[in-house]
Picture 1 (cartoon, rainbow, N blue to C red):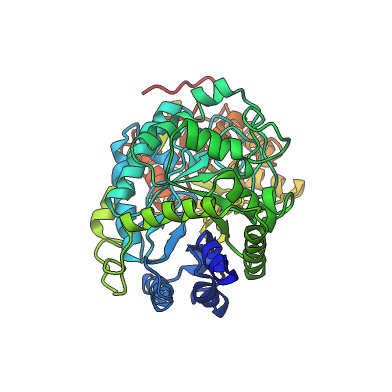
Picture 2 (cartoon, rainbow, N blue to C red):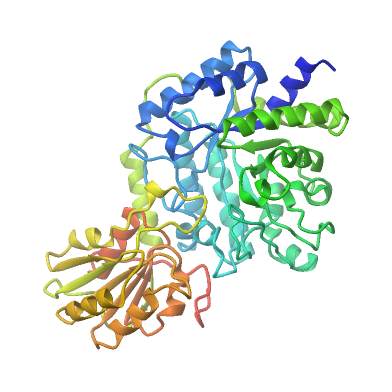
Amino acid sequence: MSQRVASIQVGQLMVVGFKGKIAPEGIIDLIHRHRIGGIILFSHNVGTPQELLSLTSSLQREAQKAGYEYPLLICLDQENGVVRRLGKGATTFPGAMSIGATANSENAFDISLATGKELKELGVNWNLAPVLDVNNNPDNPVIGVRSFGENPHLVAEFGKNAMKGLQNAGVITTLKHFPGHGDSNVDSHLSLPVIGHTRARLDEVELVPFQACIAEGADTIMSAHVYFPAIEDRENVPATLSKKVISGLLREELGFDGVVTTDCLEMKAISETIGTEKGAVEALNAGVDLVMVSHTHEVQLRTIKELELALAQGVLQEESLKASLNRINKLKGKYLSWENTPFHSEFVSLGSEEHKNIAEKVFQESVTIVKNEGLLPLQMDQNILVINPPNQTIYGVEDVKEIKTTLSDAMKEFSNQVEAYDLPTSFTLKEMDLLIQRAKEFDVIVIGTLSVSATSYEIELFNRLLKLGIPVVGVAMRNPYDLRFFPDVTAYLATYEFTYLALRTAAQAIFGKVSVSGKLPVTLLETKTTF
């Protein structure tokens, strides 16, 4: 096989990313010289709707000029909720756990259908969603509210509907993170998680949603950078690089013949162990079809060279790569054509009133009053201190620019008796004393939290505030599990995310302006989930 042919083939098996809102020369070169298979976008690539459409259109025009049979795969993580890439002009839709809290899986279909329509108008043809991880570990630092809940059958039902909604919009879907990232306490962006469950337990929990969605026509599945010793006997080999997981479990046992993609190979679970470049070779040998190198151009070029060398030396088999190319082309043939690739600026669904109404309806059905000892609704004449949580990320996949703690702003929409206090990321004892003294002047204290851990100074602050004898309302603005640390609050709400519509809905519920009906899709303390 000639070096030119080898180059074309391995390029088609890669998905790459870049910085900025305009495609750099390096990406254009990858399209023309290496015929790269796909592009992944992040928030740093997304500006106004017109800017994003201009970017996706320019990428597709380069692919067209390069003689591609099908358009480029262009993907992003629009899970909604805490992981969302679209910003200006797009509808803010609720994320997975918010939808799970509605106990109505039709909402998963409706939200995904609307999301897909907006993505399609922007030239994005592939969404890296839905998340099928079953989050049954309260300390999970990477999944949490990105999951529909802790019940595998609920996750299967909601995931299936989310998948179908996107597909009905003409957008390729991705089930992630196979075979399940929900019971880890390590973020694979930072290190290699290990999930030591038996195969029987994996069959009963983690694999249930994947099996259900494969049976309903899954498009692509993303592998997890997680080590499963019950499946892979080589120590510390993540699922992404495991032939027993990808070819054995996923392909042969579960019968999936669609496209398998990796999560980003620049995540530390791969880059700081086997290395991104060799990891790409191992992933393809394991049975993966697309390898993602999402950020660094030099690493992308080195990965291509490593793949070409592995092909030339017989480490990678031509027959296996051809099978991957066939699967990729079959997927593209189903969803993509030059005729339906948007190069225009007509936005019909994007940010429409219809979509805003859908989102608002689901937020009202999702925000959950977990506890209320006769305090809510608050009265309009009460003096209220709203304490906003420290402004920080928790998941490696989150974008910093998306973190906004605006609980006090939402509360101020409904009362002019609200005073805000923004907590810093670190707090001295003197600063805490001053806040405690100030809090004594209020009738009610409302505290927002963003995923409290056992080492958070907020625990001491919360407990000191509770000793004042002033009613305290806790609002979990991300993980509902925060109640574990503050069981004595007078009232407690869960919004599952810090998007403004979720917080506004919570504020409305606190003042009795709307009736919310969310049910916890996870277990807190002795609270049991029932549907």
